[in-house]
Length: 144
Image 1 (cartoon, rainbow, N blue to C red):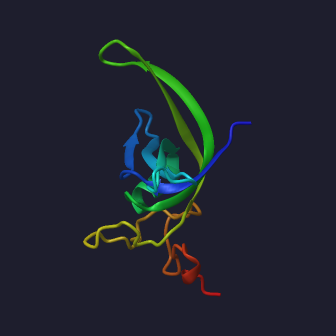
Image 2: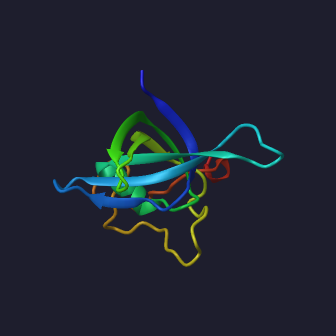
Image 3: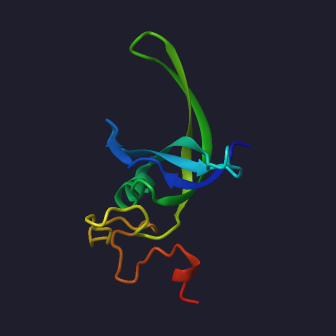
């Protein structure tokens, strides 16, 4: 079984690209806090994540550095030859599912508009997000 489940914060803004065949792919890294602190300071592990298709488009549109996310996916290893001729190995997480967590305004600069527009991609795959769409994150935001 190859299954990874992580909760962390984006370590950088997501990068959305399009392959030569027209498929969307989004790359980002998440920082996952370790349970125990080292010398009284929190420590984190950093993981590279790849999200394909509509999932990648949604993540690119709504998430920024510092925002919390819960992900599940699978580990994938690959290798390549670097420009200096050395062989490099990487292990990435290929996203299968995700959930926005934390406050919508977490770690987003105040000058950046975080409200979805009518041309945005919704989480359920429909073309439009209606006026009732809200990202619920903290228990304080839940209406019951």
